[in-house]
Image (cartoon, rainbow, N blue to C red; front, side, top):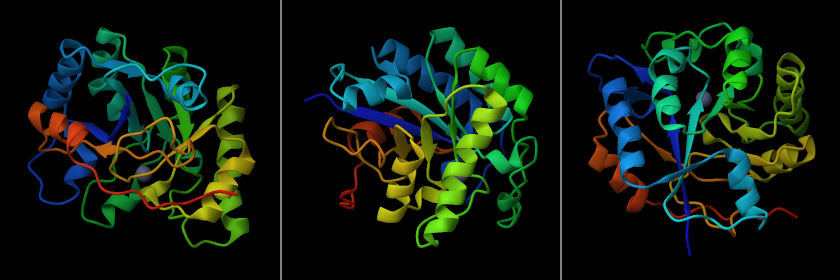
Length: 245
Ligand SMILES: [Zn+2]
């Protein structure tokens, strides 16, 4: 049975060596190699929409299926990731934080990292016009697990409406900030009308998975091509069973 490997990226660019948060930075030279590796390796890069269609049984999961996701909508995506994606015609999903468009990732500064610039509305529109899927990564980038139902609804639904308003299109895909989710969050995401949502659990996606709790593999700063291959094919952790009613 074929499975889908969803890769999780955050920032792509030119970074000094680092000891912390390595999983949220990817060297742009390595990114170029990874994209080339996917192409030469015969991987089929699916959009999130196509992934949902696979999970709905509308299409079969092709062999060597991969999805590329980029959390937080960092501006460096435009310079360092997009050209490689376009070179190979790979689709990708960028998850934007509706309340922080055009601002910077201030939560990184709390950990001693630079508060990197986030994409503006104009940039998101441009990317959308170039075929990149824009999803929601909440309104304020806070952990949703354990929050009150009304607070979760606010983050999940308000961000969808806000992004749909500025993009002029449906926003069907959600990404849990910090991967934090529980049954209430899943329920809120379902009620908001999202078709998919991604977590940070490390596993491949199979056709039986809940589309609102899709696991992913983080590509880190130190990952060589072999490292990414190993993560895709070997590195899995059991998923927490969250069964929606
Ligand atoms: Zn994030």
